[in-house]
Image (cartoon, rainbow, N blue to C red; front, side, top):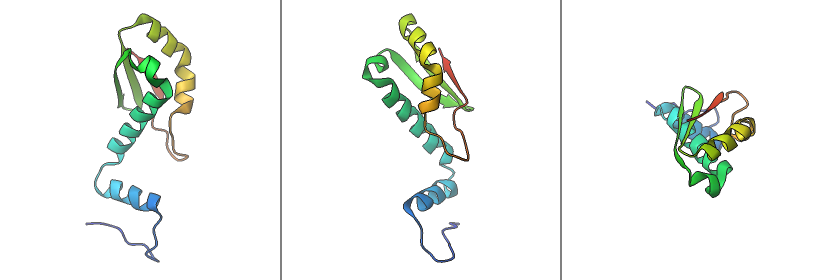
Length: 100
């Protein structure tokens, strides 16, 4: 069931976590949570009070707000936000930011 075997039985914490997520099919959920949390931290409390929802689907980060001023601000920060989101050297988890 678990493929926690390694030649020398020595694992780093990150290797063990990655293997556990992979074995339990939780990798996508983990990275979705990581991206949403990072987005909240990047935007800060001032903007977050006007944002009702942040979701990640099909490598698109959806940010929902009812404020037109916040929408304009997010449109201007679009590329900076995308660049600051966590990514792995082997894989990019967000290709596009969509402001709703």
